[in-house]
Image (tube, rainbow, N blue to C red; front, side):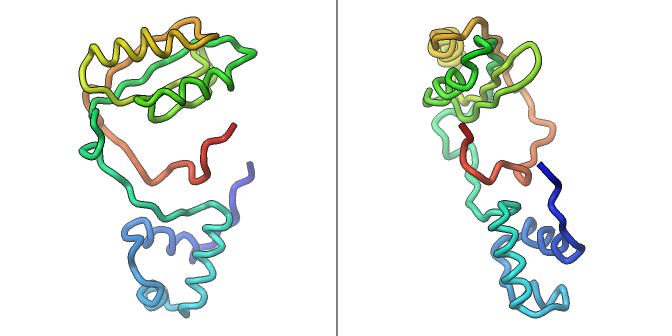
Length: 157
């Protein structure tokens, strides 16, 4: 994947939108000293190239379960993608990534209490065909989290 070719105006535009995506194109144009059509065109291009997207972020308070855990999974190498998809179908699992290292799948989940997490990790995830071993890590404190860098496209197969 090649790095996108963005100029200073693109970077300034992204910085403004990252602070407040609701700001008007007219205000952005005024602040950057360009016309509104330039801003509109740049935003459209950045969206088409999947470099930016506009969405509402929701807080954990809207979720039924608010504790976060990571489940590291060792799975059969030849079936990792299908196993990852099967894990992704489990309702409490919020994100699944295929990784390199001693574990080839990492799942992020939300849970209410440790019993729920135990049922999820040692039950539902470990029972997925092809899963060999799981290790669970509980989040006890978040030091830094940035919601500014995310996959804009949907889940990949």
